[in-house]
Length: 241
Image (cartoon, rainbow, N blue to C red; front, top):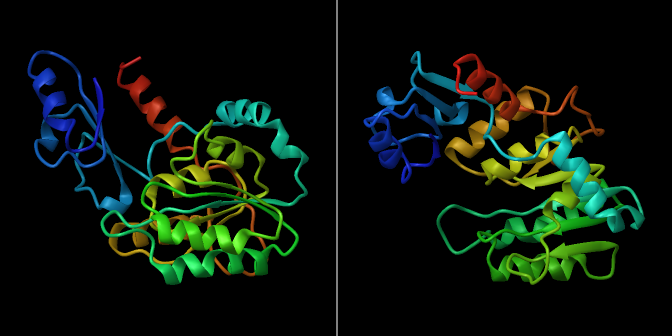
């Protein structure tokens, strides 16, 4: 049984008591010692234990194969003028959406760093209507594609990642930071976030997977961040597959 998040943890433990082997991603909240394997981001400061596997960032579905498939599915994005810069906009876990100061700074910062780029922007459910409207207004009149959270039609998020020459991502999303770093493209982190998000951003920069915006030059990571593959290998070692 593979579970994720605190809400799923009690169900996984219930199944474990009935003989299932259990793998849990993220902090379970309780009963940590009863899982066969816990996969926890280092930014969550997991206590060392034999059944704990710390990882950098979060597991996700972005892989070379999925990026190749998205590149084919969204081939139209390849006709847009380059360079193409993905702008991934999140928002706070709690609150009324992305603060307006951060929202107002995103597109101008992207334009300063990539003056001739086509910006491939997407917002999330946490961005909020006001911040989304500001970003849309700032993008108007220059080459871009914008997918607002909740827009009808297929979500081009994977296509944006696949076709991006560089990625700008707000500091408040563990998932988007991890997925951006899986592309192998230069990743620039915009804005600030407290606590665990700040810890992850610092770790990604220290490991060479990302830089803070603005950044001198455009450093390329030595390789894509692929913690999901490392977790899969560990599961095979433990006889889960």
